[in-house]
Length: 259
Image 1 (cartoon, rainbow, N blue to C red):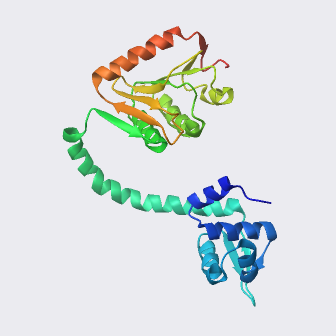
Image 2: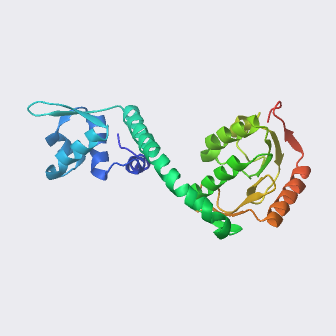
Image 3: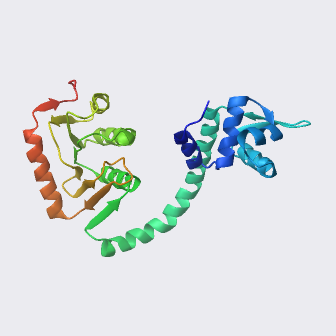
């Protein structure tokens, strides 16, 4: 079995080197082996194989049966990923409080005087992060217009929007008939959903105070480009335009209906 480049890239993004990924997948395919055989099957230089295997063991991907020679066993991918997730969460938790406690007061003290009204936001993670900030600050109303609901962002949006609904925030979601029906069903119950034949671009308006306009690429693409602003005039204009499109949308999906 040949492991796809997509999976190898995913393993590298989770902290494995090329040699480590090759060694682990060889163990999965061929079963437990001593270091010499792993070196041959995974095409890892023998001079590096013990370093590679030691790193894999410390990262939670393999375990060792000591002997002459020692034999190496692959752990199930699900177990290895759980270990990585716990390690990342622990590292994040340990550092979050320190960073927030010392740096957030500095940011808040300077922000009012130095933050511009309009920001250019580039890249999917930055756009999604800014949207998340907007949602968490919402107190009364969220207006969302997207040609298609980004699959990658669905889970994040659902959790946050559910919390907003529980706080009494009114949520209106407008999309097109091209949107994935299963994804639309996931959003039933959080507010009112309307569907249009076409929509050019998208954005979010929060409490008529903040607006995010997506200019290029879909939110889930690395090339995503957006404008964020808390300029009152721009936010009002965006809200008025949303209402214009909303009133022209004929198919209505309420929290009690079906797409």
